[in-house]
Image 1 (cartoon, rainbow, N blue to C red):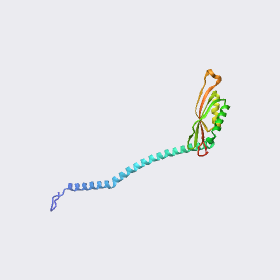
Image 2: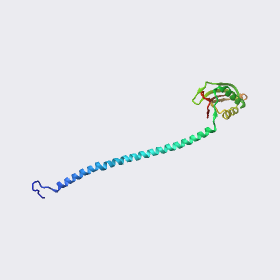
Image 3: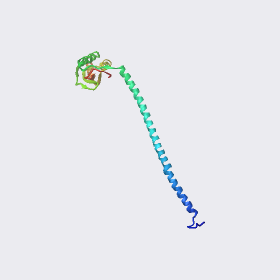
Image 4: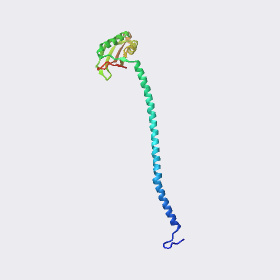
Length: 194
């Protein structure tokens, strides 16, 4: 050991300890100033990449859904273009009932009762409930239903009842139809699809 002229002797471990302390302080400062911000930025970028992947997946699902909906819309527009129905005014109710009775007679049905109900108004149309009952065979009722679809596309079958008895085969079955006639909205006469 060397001795200083005016002080206690300096040992190597004092120098080493001071060097280790300086290195530790510099390392902590380097970590706080350089390494820690880089680690935080890396974590933030990883989270953003994960979020971006999720958003890409959602965008792909939305794109697929949009393509599917556009195909469906195109199909519906094509169907509408080929099958428009001109809705008549409710003022033509008697004429519509006469056409229903004519179709029933052509189908071989005997109509005992026909009555219309209270009109229900909607944005694009009005619905008029119509009750038709009487007697006929299964075949005549089937013919009537097919005729409705072909000749009166603005009339919808809501419910029907056909009751027959084997003992009274000659009289035919009794039937009851609950129909809805779709007429033009009260404010205008529109061409609307069914």
